[in-house]
Length: 215
Image 1 (spheres, rainbow, N blue to C red):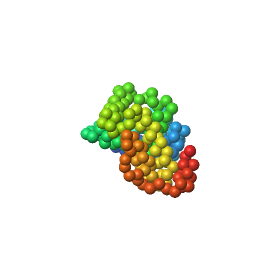
Image 2 (tube, rainbow, N blue to C red):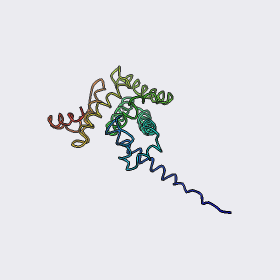
Image 3 (cartoon, helix red, strand yellow):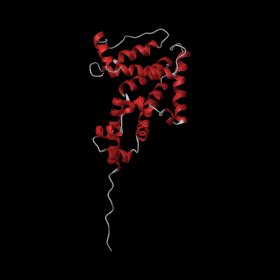
Image 4 (cartoon, helix red, strand yellow):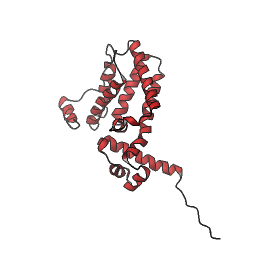
């Protein structure tokens, strides 16, 4: 009786490493090109054939869905860690700075979470958990006199996007410059702003030239 050797499947660790390689490449590509990026762009960045991408992810939405969990995990860590801080003002500022930092350092966030048609893919229970925790951080800070009344979590997204534009414009010449504007934003939410602004701003001409590349 003839026997056939069983097919050898790649170890799960190898499969996960390959998947991680594609997801990391996708993060870079969507950060650079936004929603216009294609699976072909991701394949080139990952150093694999486009067929490899399609075998793992049948379309761009499937790839964005796979990235979704990564990005949401990062957001939930920021929110959950801020919620453990006893002081309401410090807790809110930790949340706001964390969200700004996340957007400044990973510009793929906007495409993965808020690109065309993406918002409807949020699971309702996740939206409720994230929203209720963020709203509680905001409400507690307002009640403690540490935050201007009227602030909303929509403002958090808008402010994070604003600072991420500075981060993109200055990432080559002044990679930490976004921290100065994050400081302005975070302390500007206090009823009476406070705090030393770091780092020093670049020359006016250098700033305008940097912004011209992204506006």
